[in-house]
Image (cartoon, rainbow, N blue to C red; front, top):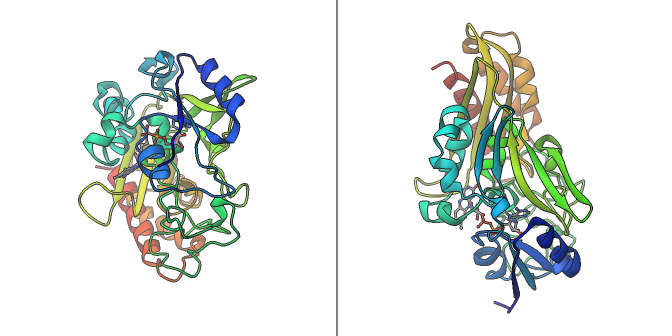
Length: 330
Ligand SMILES: Cc1cc2nc3c(=O)[nH]c(=O)nc-3n(C[C@H](O)[C@H](O)[C@H](O)COP(=O)(O)OP(=O)(O)OC[C@H]3O[C@@H](n4cnc5c(N)ncnc54)[C@H](O)[C@@H]3O)c2cc1C
């Protein structure tokens, strides 16, 4: 591993100033469970992904840590650990889909120092991206090795150009919760809906979200759910210990007398962004959930474009979505 400079920022402004000063070779450091133990130690870099030379620790910024609940909903500092989110009684009670998604991340040890901001902004787990010998699009190369290589775990939806899947469980839940995030940049702070936050390879193959090199995520805001809101989280993994999602599904919906009023269904592990299954949501509006769930979930098949080794994920996505939607009736 190459030597790097480390700064302990104490304010958001200072962190952004350092990012601005050092440019794309500087990186925000939170728990470091992906950036240091993954990206840097595995030597993942290329012309489009410069090796980090300056790390700016944001866990030393008191303003970026903590969970608060007010009239307008929930606010979580981006440097808050996943364990703190899991243990929050208020989140368990009012936003259980987030609590359960955070609980399904990695292992207790990683959740103890892994942060919300780090989880949402972690880089993809594609084995070609993480392999030294593959100069793929994301590293500034001109090929996606998943197209001709082993693509067992790659995207089945929206994977043009590059076929990574978005790895974050909390991002999937937060998109279903219609959350927003506050971003700090040299010109100040702005709020962005998660609907606008994640970007696919066509928009920019070098990144997975709208953050520029001189910006950082400060906090996440989640609205208070309307009355009659039901939530579900389900995640299928290859093995029953800590692992990334083969597919996960987060559902947040209002249901009245068994009839779907309004809701958001988001799938993780299937696309380069947390993927909102609007086609399923629309098919459920005004319908009896119990009788409509199967046909609505099956509409995912029309959206899927699996690769040579991963058509099995289409079946999983359909089955898991039906199961998650039906679980709202329990
Ligand atoms: C063995 C293992 C299993 C895992 N399993 C899962 C899983 O099942 N589900 C899942 O979702 N994740 C999983 N992960 C990923 C893990 O959750 C992340 O590594 C962790 O959440 C990242 O948090 P961190 O604070 O350590 O981030 P860091 O490693 O410090 O940062 C990760 C990335 O986010 C950027 N970043 C961090 N904070 C901010 C911020 N505030 N603003 C802008 N950019 C920021 C960093 O620059 C870096 O690029 C697993 C990881 C491991 C090692």
